[in-house]
Image (cartoon, rainbow, N blue to C red):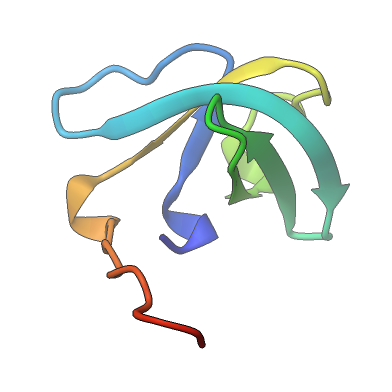
Length: 85
């Protein structure tokens, strides 16, 4: 999933058309026009969200419990690689 297709917040977004997960915010980087957030999910994997700076009331802090969400049509499931790669 592309980072710009994710939304992030302290509460789960409302709406029946979103999929999502909760996790812990582990890294925040200011990139000028946008913020980059790295979220560690309960299974140990990380997701990256890139949010325009105007789309958040205030930047989120590392260590916060956050929700990430996306539209189902933006998710692409990739097959597991076969054999040594």
